[in-house]
Image 1 (tube, one colour):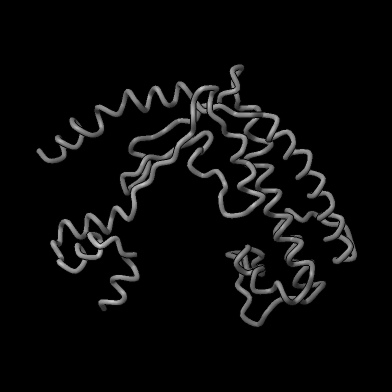
Image 2 (cartoon, helix red, strand yellow):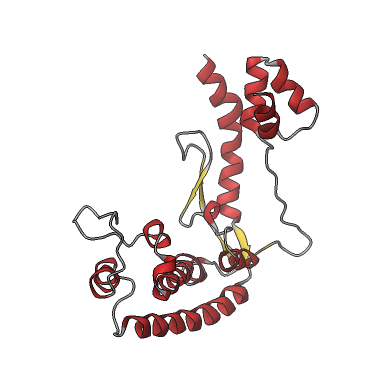
Length: 223
């Protein structure tokens, strides 16, 4: 009965809304992506040349196998505890390369190259062909797309537009509102912890929220 209530009162009413979201899409200002494509491709070429110069030869930077040979066999940059892939090759994933930043200038160049290449292939070059004649991008929002109950988005994933770096955030400027409209952001503030306070009736946790304190600092202080 409880599950039925969730379906009837929460999931079912929002189905129509999700359908309309998928159909309406989001406005894309293609010039922003075009400008970024021009700028980032030039920078990618510059980084490519710089990496080849540091390596002393031209090679496929996007191939983990070839990159591993250059970094660890030719330049001897591997640490004693360098992790390996399932095939036994020394790993070139970001977390492993981060540990080697101070050992050779090529490492920073490779990390910068990878970031740009990912932004270009996943977003900047990939989004424009998906935009319709009205400059709108249509994703598919999935109500039950995650095991935690959160909504998911696919083809493309609009919930995964970069936000951590300056280069990535620039892509967000391509997402715009129609004239006369605005894009707004809403977010629950520490909703899980507030639910925990309600369900547990913990006096100190409730007190923290009522006082408007930072919940993590408040809990830590009381502990």
